[in-house]
Image 1 (cartoon, one colour):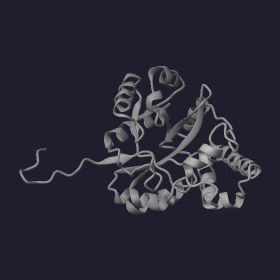
Image 2 (spheres, one colour):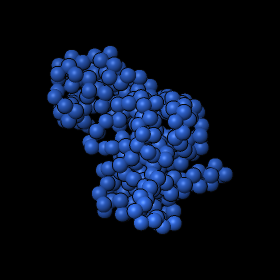
Image 3 (cartoon, one colour):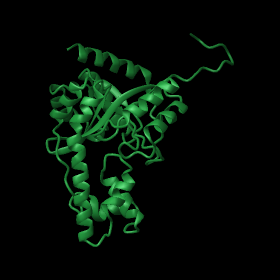
Image 4 (cartoon, helix red, strand yellow):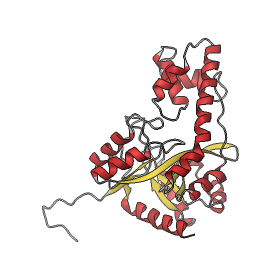
Length: 286
């Protein structure tokens, strides 16, 4: 349909399929995140907190109230050939079952944080676990929370210094995570009725890295992400088409101007969500 002269053409609906809340390391509670997505005019919004689905029930209640489609999701930290990569589980049906499976990894996050605090104390940084927990505010604890805690006590000036001096790999307070292999992560997502999508593969998203994952049951690639260059986006779109993977995309929004990321800014087309829905139906049909 062609608009009449002088008639404004409404913007095409778009979605954001990668965002975080205080259930992990975001700045807004799940309910507030959904309200922000609704205010941004999104047709659908995926909550994909790190290694937890604890915010989904609250987000779903708010989404139902405002009439926004919520895509239940999670961002898993997994390993491929010894390298940590992130895997999005989208359209998760069995939220409680997957959450129960992730509790072991969530518990490890607290143990890991306690060890980081002990190591920081050992090098003269007087942070406490109580301070880290206060920053996490009930979310899945990670290094960013430890960084914020030591910033708050004046031990470092910002997050970059916290990681460069203490928390990055090889630094005094670095503690490695329990490893979840990517094959196991894909299987967990499928068992919960979802689809598995590699998150922000960037320049590493090349055929030699993606092809083995297709054999493991990978469903999609995150094509649009704030960290991707134009060349990355073009290459990933071509790989998705070549391997018959569904495209995905999102802002990786954390509820604030996190590296300039704005909810909905990636303009992910609604058609990609439609393609994902079809993939979910095929996957669940077996």
